Length: 117
Length: 113
Image 1: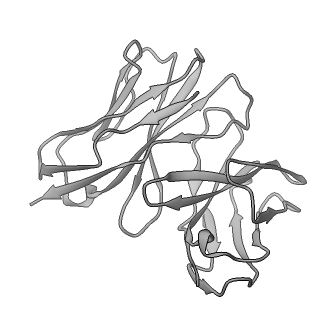
Image 2: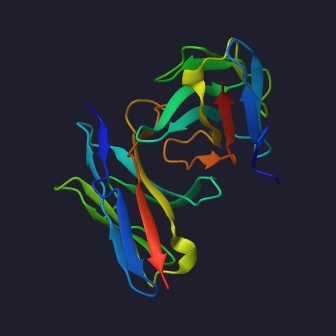
């Protein structure tokens, strides 16, 4: 069965340092997409970055990059030069791409990141 | 372009009351969905719709109804609220492509006493 595991309930990082948030996934499909979302204390869900299973390059979006290791089934989010505004919950999610256009996202339980000044 | 909007932001109900959570998007997205978010359980899909007139159940549909009469609107109805429905509810939409990103509304925090 499809599953997303985020093993770090909480993380601390010093401002301006880089931090890696772990995400491992389980799927039997060859085609899938991986997403990271940020949820600040205000509650909204903000899309950060997407990685397709067939993408050869690791996805990057500004200070966010995805360390995609397909053989290990991991899709860790790397935030470089952390800022105070990065303090939030971070969710990893997966969608299997062969199962039809309406296939739901499978979500991890999230990692709470606190950036210290 | 307001994106995905949800009303109300906060609501308190008594057990047995009914109410409708409103969701609208102005991006002409085909796909819309409702999630609930509970501590320790992540986001769980309640219902979703792949277009006007088409809805289907997600993981936790019991106690909720939806309809999709227009592309823009996707209301979620609680027919008889229960304390177990205390949660934060998110509406989301996406264009319809498999790799498309979902855009979320700001959420509705519902408490059922």
